[in-house]
Length: 179
Image 1 (tube, rainbow, N blue to C red):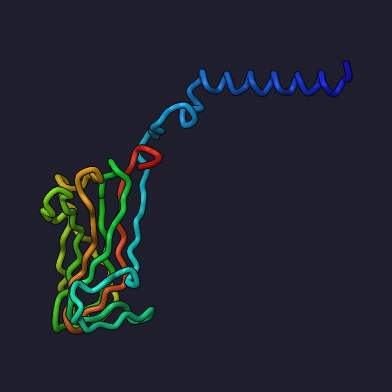
Image 2: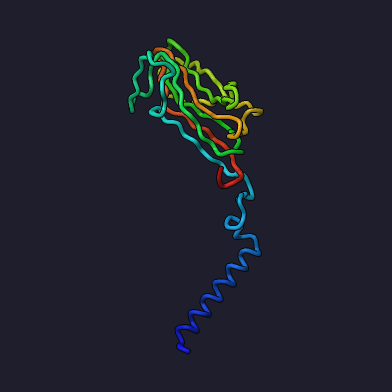
């Protein structure tokens, strides 16, 4: 028998032995299990850029500029897609306001069966310095667990004349690799 076949057979046998050892040790869980669970929760970030926002009515007059942000006297919305079973832990909101109004940011969930709306997080920011600032939107803990089987999720901001929205970030924790 040629030497290369013997070496090849030995390499195949060694590879199979390593795979068997890994599967028995639990290291290969992601290959054999349908749900890969991390040993401790991981942090995830879902960012919302001003360019992702749509006005809530067709008659809204607004400006969306890379440098100046989203401005207009209307509310703007976008869908949010977080992993099933994740928990929202924080919402950050970047804005400016010139004094004629107070911008508001919110995360909402809508029940699939009847469109019932719940406010997961909401905050109105009263700062008239016309300076770009960041603020926190408090999260209602009882509504923070993501359940994609029952709800859809969205982010909204309502602006008045002189208000600008730049971006938002939803921080969440998750324990599994996948939805």
